Length: 144
Image (cartoon, rainbow, N blue to C red; front, side, top):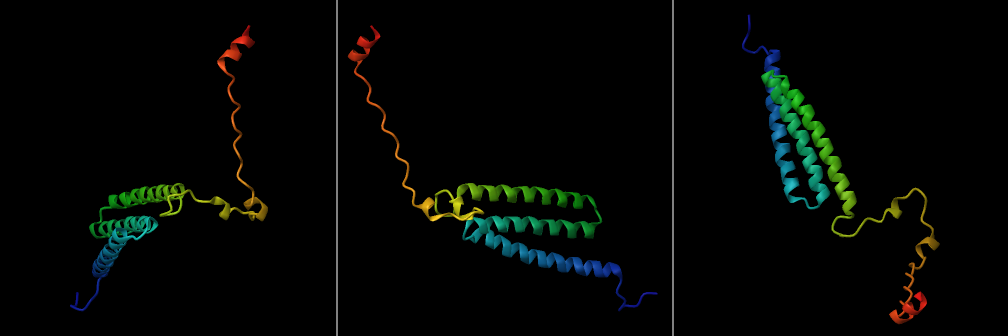
């Protein structure tokens, strides 16, 4: 016999899933705000990666509430795609250089061996001037 104050496992799962959906909804709104406002490109990329994690959380809670286990496979696939997208964005930022500079990144500052002072003071290499072309008349004489 069930009394009115008795808590069942189904009630615990229902209350926990409602609480999880509420927390995920708040996290989703805050993360969308960060993705829109930025202020930098890496901030936006981190926010998009976080959005993928939040959506995976939504899918997992919905799978738990509905009992439909195919949603778990969808969440795993979304996690893989989100990871690859984050790696692609990171490579894009690395190839682009410093944010806002428009110039390529100087990788000498992150090498394992220290940069020596004479290496920094080397003058730039001068291009050799091309030899002047001989006049056409003198080339004809050489051919004969």
